[in-house]
Length: 350
Image 1: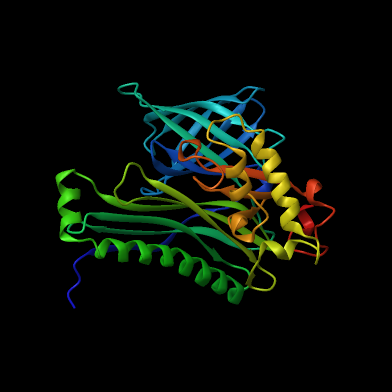
Image 2: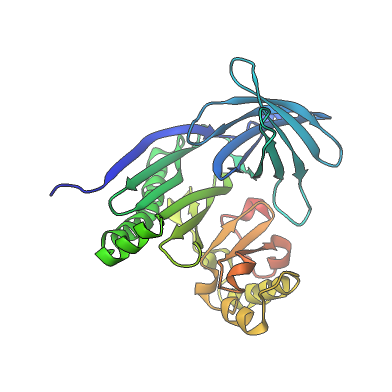
């Protein structure tokens, strides 16, 4: 059967995400002007330098600058030929209540002085062997059916080849499950739907990105973040997560972290509701919190293992209105210590 859509598969793994402890480099992933970026920075006193690249271009740009004690920084961007091609101004923040450093600020175009917002989050990679996390990309565009799909997801290499293959197979299957579901919806659009979309200049899309929340010799924790538009007033956003045991080659369930009969759902529900009530943004009410963060397993399906605790992600509409956006709650290991199981995948983090 003749295919009616064009698929571009970028299968080659690209640019290694790895933190080298010996030189103090930190790796960040995030967005600049709506484009995915990866940045590697060395911070030594008031000096700040490193490189960054756009995931779609995959060409390193050199960064040189300074940072003060409060974390305010300026970085000048240089092309391979030495030409100045941009400037970052922003804030390096590492609050005690969060897990890892974050970068926020603006990128300035030296030609027209236009600014683009950027944000990036530190990636924790603490392998002691030759394991590496690489980014794999997928893209598909169908002009006739008016949709586009872009996805980036992690692949593991090095270490135990069998375990790495299991991780890669599982992650890719999870990503493609969502991709295939979206494509199926788009291919079943009626002629009337397509006519309406074309008349209004609307193009549907699915975008997928990931955050490497933590990776060590025992466990990898990945957060996936999806954005979709299929008509309507605004895009939709949702998340999922993969926590993978590198010792057993199996997916870790949330219940695996807690003692048997600990009634962990009651504990994490109470902690999440308490912390969500401290959020001063609009869109909350008690009934919404009770329903979306109540002690049910389905309310805590999007969770990640981090250095300081367990991160719970609530999608838009789950615990608050769409306008309030997604909500994240970090439950520290200290807060959960009375119910945590011994010898679990988080043993070295507690």
